[in-house]
Length: 193
View 1 (tube, one colour):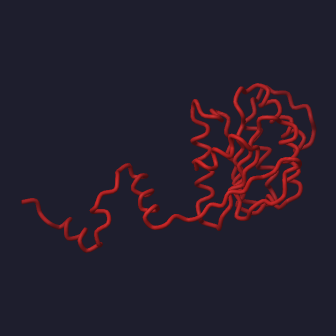
View 2: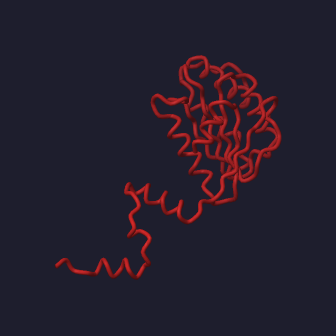
View 3: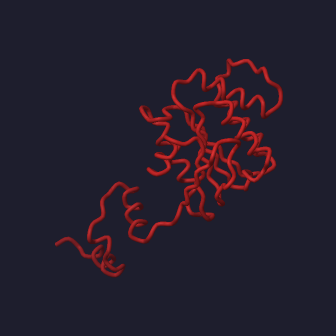
């Protein structure tokens, strides 16, 4: 997560990729939650969008930006893409911190030229919009003039996986965590004496 956050501080587009089930969605959610915390780089300025249907990808992004945008902004440009980019520009003007858009692509929607065009236009017309794109495949093509930096998410080895699990339940590892299953079950059945 630290590597991704460091890249997002210096780059405008980062693609987190890896095989299905490796944890890209979870990483995207964690990055969004952490980055949106008060005092962080994207404090209160993070939008996480999950795209699970290729045919409605643009609509989902448009609706998410509509929700994120201040409702008092007049809707001037017509067309979904134009209005979405315009809203992002307006948000950028009224918010002091950079904006992070986390796009969790579960259906390969980033392969659609129209979606890539929307993202390229949004990056071109804004100055503080940053993208984190979660996808199963790396993105080798730039989004307009913005190079996408790819970060591969790999699995954890058994020791790091156990450490992460135990950290998540808020307790440190102890030697008993590495005993054989029989030893643990026998230790639990011993009555206090």
